[in-house]
Image 1 (cartoon, rainbow, N blue to C red):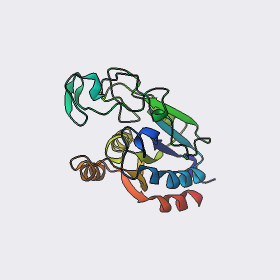
Image 2: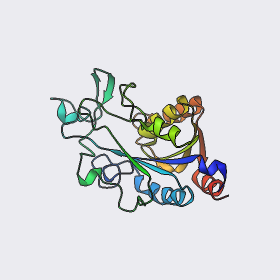
Image 3: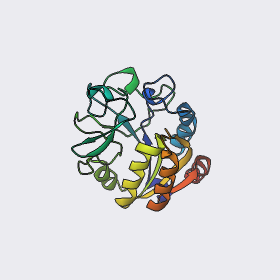
Image 4: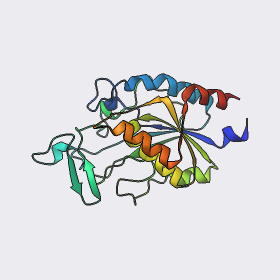
Length: 214
């Protein structure tokens, strides 16, 4: 096995029922990411899954704020927070991984957003940008230098995770065709701009499969 492959981890972000067809916060064509992600997992021996894991009445839910609706932005203690429909509630069907996602080979499942008062887009930090999830330490302890990111949503959790990965010193690649965006008010194009500015690369999932198999 090549040293590059040994030093590469695949980070699969929030491929959960509530973000897919029929879910509370369904992302357009989200189900289409499952097949390319499964193929990437076949080629990458080191797989990490993130799982949105909110308690009931989480502070990011519009229903937790009287008179507020999903899509509005509210100023919370740590800054602006988009309000969402109730989603990925701990132990619910919506919080489960997509039924066709091949989760059996995952070496770590990282649950995020479980603190009532904090949302968590990034796999590395809560939205206060200070509270660590511990993922960076885990990756460094295991000697990973390169991350491939895939999953949902491209313009929120994938984007924030990629930006943090770059900032923390990891070579970072986002797998095209293995992500889908919510695209709220141009958020997809803004995410593309931010990714390019961060230094993260975007490569076709098929090309990454080939490079991992080499």
